[in-house]
Image (cartoon, rainbow, N blue to C red; front, side, top):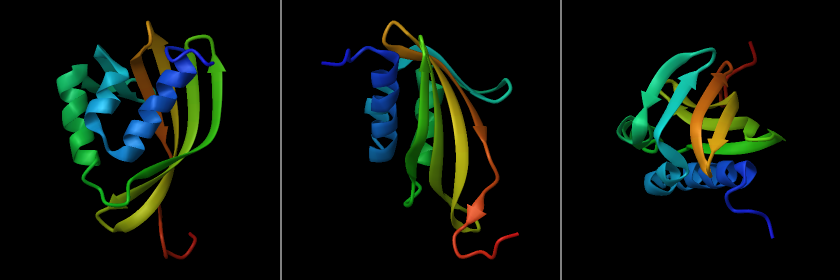
Length: 126
């Protein structure tokens, strides 16, 4: 049986909670002092209260869903490549995202994401 505290298992629980829009389950995967960054190092949330506020807004999006395309695990680092469906002001669309998670003692200590260009559904290719 896989270790539920393994970095891969922790990040998968985070992804499952994200897709369920369950902010409490999502926060349970993060350390209380965890930090989220936009790559290469812009801090966007620090600590549980800021993470909760950031995710509560995101979880209001009716079409929100992250689909895992590829995952790499190297020790306590998990790198996910995802396609995320979002509700943008201009309409529903997707973005590709790469997220790098550092897992320490069974919780995500930091996450750094790089988001690609948005593609609106129904829009002509540019």
